[in-house]
Length: 455
Image 1 (cartoon, one colour):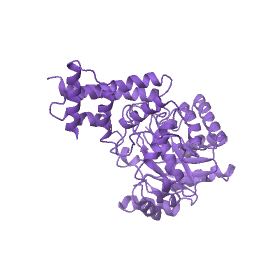
Image 2: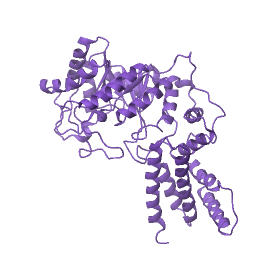
Image 3: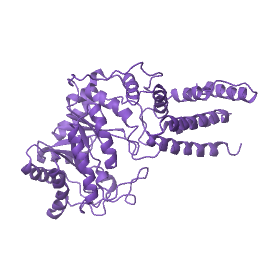
Image 4: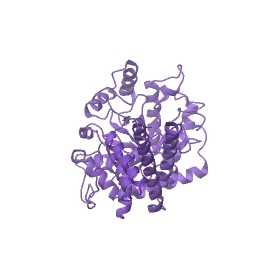
């Protein structure tokens, strides 16, 4: 197929060179044909009219009881902007990313390491930051969203918390006590990924983690018996018994962790795997779905509809949260719509219908809707990794073919044309998309120079 596309591009350029003018959208049509061959679930055309996945009288009969999202190193302003969207999509849960609570959160588009961020969990949260998040708590309540306050006491920290230390417990308690004093009733302790970043002597103990979470929950419930707690354990994926050290850790949680505590689990997102994990950890579960997360990338975003999720998961886990895009929180609303659709009615979910409706939901102008469809197609692919970029992959496919420079020219011009149209049609929206397109096109330009500079 790619060879035929290259021939079409080549002859289109020849015609232009000989003075034959083709239609203005030739570049768009051919450019998108190249892209379309890699699209798994995005329809060619948009639906004729809006048709929400719910009506005002609907109640989820087969879906997840708790449906929501966590931020990804988001700012308070990003959280505030997304709360009405969550409510509009019939979601009822919002958790802050623990990176947001770092003393120095990562800047948009930066890599995650100890140099780009600081987790000084023992320090008081600055007054200005508290005031900003108190607005987030307040607005969540106004829209019927349960806000969950989360902190990671160890990851990327120069002094990881000793969870058996009374002193460190009190230092961590100050943050949870503040959030509770402002009306928060859901809390999370996240102790994930420390095995990837810690030294060999770093202590990973199911007993210690259970003790700490139990103690925190008990103190929170002295003031509010309705408080809910979620633990993200160090071993949060798989079936729970395949790796001996993980099985031992989870068995300790099963035995010692307060039975009211929920446990986060990230998959594989199938009901059988969830049942196996639950049979080991023996606690209520939340699915933490790592889609469409991009680990704060400046150029890699994922806009395809959610797919490959087992609808029977809703019978095994109580809650579902999406791990979203980082700096691109506005365009994140498109895949988020499909996630909300699946969460609300897993058995009735139709991914192609859902992504079309997700685009219509963003605006009423047909030209804007069609442009958003193009952007979705550009950044849609099978899930090949958090940092996978289908635009770069497509350019590599073009450049690998013989006599490919004409097609590479047209594809690059098409991308730049999309960039211009996004600026024109969305002068006051989608700054996140504008920045991402600019970053992606810069990378394509680099690839172009490497491939053709000697020709």
